[in-house]
Image (cartoon, rainbow, N blue to C red; front, side):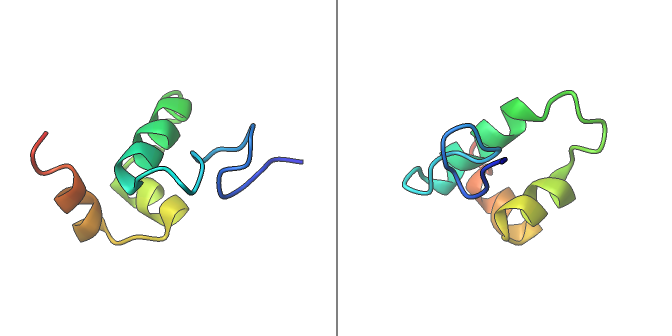
Length: 59
């Protein structure tokens, strides 16, 4: 069964990881998905697009 929320083998990094690390992990594992965009990332992490942009504003 696919794990959600960061169990080993799941789509998301462990919940103990920082939001920044969780998003990097998720993005790396979904690079082949043509629908990967801020909306899909934020939906998977239950955060706003604004918060996503704030997390990565220095990069």
